[in-house]
Length: 290
Image (cartoon, rainbow, N blue to C red):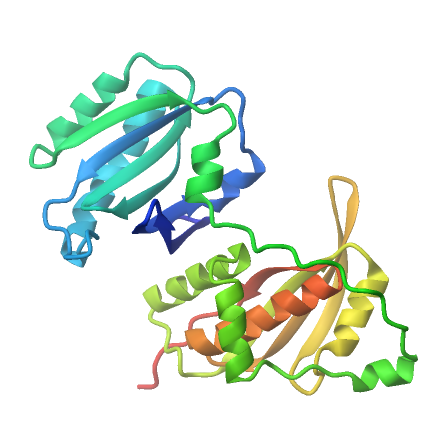
């Protein structure tokens, strides 16, 4: 998978689709100079009973994607933003200026892949709604602000450690945020580890990066994280003149997806309670024992 891209499943117009999207484009969308949404549809040769691409067909679809990316950039000045698979087709999405060469792009790709049925279309989309509302995962709904509680003393706060979520809490949080953007990035990182030959059952240092806009809120967050579970460090950076307060939590852990998701979801919720955001997971692949 390309850097900055994430993959997940979603219900699109009553149909389950597999979506792969460039999340890094969110910071640039909408681009007023790229106000046309181009969709190139490829009919799958041998879809699964659910209308998805079988693993055996993926290499050919990846070749088509590379050819499309090159042709759309070269001939239409467009940028790829994602693709979706469902209903026995794969749709590739691009944004670009108005171009008269779409037919040339399709002809070029069809010539390279004569066994595939390929069609294309274009529609004005200056607000990038197709990208933001269909391809990008939905943001979790904001919870109503709670009434402020009396601030406990520093000694009392130290004792308010938070254990990682047990099974029933984990299940509830997975219902709330199955498509949380941070969680999608974490899953993409785990996929990269698997591709590198990682043994998910082996423990290794796993770090979690969280960002806060206020030093006091970060300090309160750290007091509520179980220090018996995590080691932590803090640092500050400037982003466009704004100061960011970072916290890095680290502990030995396997990279089994259920264990990682439980940790990440709990940190997402706890950071949000203190005005912070979960940013990224950091670890390395560990090979199976010989």
